[in-house]
Each structure stands twice: as C-alpha cells, then as structure tokens.
Length: 246
Image 1 (cartoon, rainbow, N blue to C red):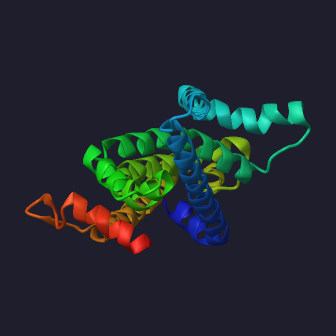
Image 2: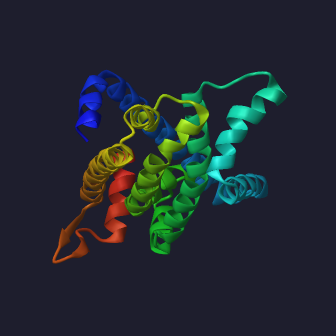
C-alpha cells in the first residue's frame, strides 16, 4: 500500500492529465448527447412522417446496439472503410453522444408528451405559432421533467468513460491501470478509482439538482412538504409566456 501511495504521489501530473481526459469525454459527450436528444426527440413528435421515421430508426439502432461495439466500430472498423482514423477522445465523444443521445431522445419525447393538453389549447387560443408554443410554453414545462432522467443518463455516461482505456485513450482508467501494473497493488488502484468516480458522480448530481431547482423556480414551482405546488394557473402561465414574447 505504501508503494502505491508513493507512486500515486509521484504520478500526480499524469493522474491530473487522465482526469482531464475523463472530464472532457464526459462533458463533450454529454453536450453531443443533449443536442442529439433534442433533435431526435423533437423529430419524433413531428406531424410529418419522414422526420418521425428517421428519428425512430436512429433511436432504435443506437439503443439496440452495444456502446462497447459502437466504440470499437468507430475506432477500429471505420478507418478501414473511410481511410480516416478518429482521435481516441473524439471517438469516445462521438460514441457517447450517439448512444446516450438515442436514450435522451426518448426522455425528450416522453416529457413533451406529458405536458397537459390544456397548455397546448391555451397557447392555441392565444394565437401562438407552433414554434412559439414549443419554445415558450411546452419546452419550459417539459424541461423540468427531463432533468432527473438526464441526470441519470449523465451519471451512466461518466461511468462508461473507463471504456476509453480499450481504445488507448489516456484517461483516468488508463493512468491508474498503468500505476497498478507498475506497483502490483490491485486493491489500492481500483479502490482509488471507485472513490474518484464516486466523487465525480456526486458532484455532477449536485450540479444537476441545482439546475432542476432553478428550472422549477423559473416555471413558478416550489417544493413544500415534499410536494410540488404550482404558484400560477396553467392559463396564466401561458398568457405570461405569450406576453413576454411580445
């Protein structure tokens, strides 16, 4: 254990570099997944058949295939077809974005579908355009419902970043694995990884909880006695959105 601690302190610069790669993969992969989630989610609720069909095919394909295989295909198989090799970090970001974006699209679709029908009817009664309705009335309410599910997906994405080790990315897992091989301290190495990933996941959870509370305050919601209370009626909320847009 003392040998591992000594080697750990000596390798702090490499550990910081590996941690930075892990954070980059998590944040960039999450941003790519978020963009794809909204693109596919909004396409899935379109009245047009083609966008709905494209969304369905993409979502089912990336949800129905393994992230492990997607990562290997992008890094090892795609260069043989295209002649272009992705950087390991970029490959991870693309794979995470596609895989978790497909799951996130279902979150977006479900949240939009759960907005009460009265909200749509009130927006139509105020002569709001479809785009205006979606931007000012539907999405702000759906966003609050998306955040808990997005938090779970974000934590899952973080926990998948050790897969980057398999494609030679110099992430945290790679650095700790090299440290383990050099010292022979398997227990200490993997215990260190457990602690670091727990701290990262907990920090992300706290940030997402702050985001959720902020979204609820903007919508006029507050918590009390463990339940949510709406401070304005549905019609007033829609009218306020319409007035603010004018």
